[in-house]
Image (cartoon, rainbow, N blue to C red; front, side, top):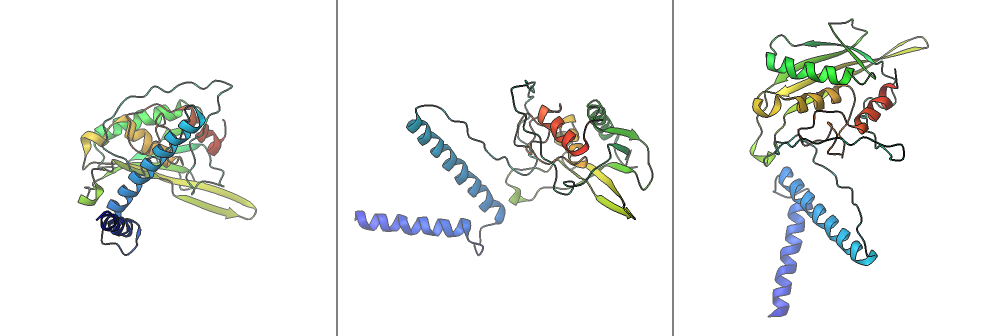
Amino acid sequence: MKHRNRLFWLIMLVAGIFLIYSTESPVPIAARNTVKQGITNVWTATTDTVSTWLNGGPRSVAKNGASIASNAPSQASQVPSATPSQAVDATPALSIVQGHQLRSVYYYRFDDDLPQSEHDVFLKAVKAYNATGIVKLVAGQGKKSDNQITFSSYKKEMSAESFGSTELGAGGPTIIVETYGSQVTVINHARASLNLSYPLQSVNDAVAMHELGHALGLDHSQSKASVMYPITQGVSQLSAGDIAGLKAIYGSR
């Protein structure tokens, strides 16, 4: 009986692995990704515990976050100031802006049908980014050759396969490279938008800061103190890593 029981559970284990990792699995991709992330977290925690036992002390482990904004409960985070002896992990740049020298001045405008509540949160975000002195966001249309940001909204309801995750906004650059002889000009026509299918969750300072960060070229950060953390934490102040990331893209003015 023991052998039979072991064989049964071995068959179940193999079947489970097939359902999760096989490309031919009937299980939805979103569900498989969720289970994979859970397995990864359990494995990381287990190896961390074993390492602690073997080494006789604690060990820090970096964990990867999800890749979509969520309706997880928001919690204000206080950003610690970096000391000279403390290394700052810069928020990474989106791959589309890497290798380009972007100009730091942008002209921004609002879509005509954008509600006033979205105007307000985006204006606060503009003020926060301008306060860094790294970029300069100016109200106005600008010329075609100028960097531009359009603030807008859209509606997108989550499907059953989203498993409780809610997309609160979207943003990002559109890079245009113009060449005149030996002169190369890089232009960013960016957009930052909030999802009005969930206005109580999306229309706030934290989401506006996050999407404007994407428009300026910032990618997701693994730090929960960053406005660019992919799952909303209610953080609306740029972290030291966010500022370092902006400097890496635009330099210091």
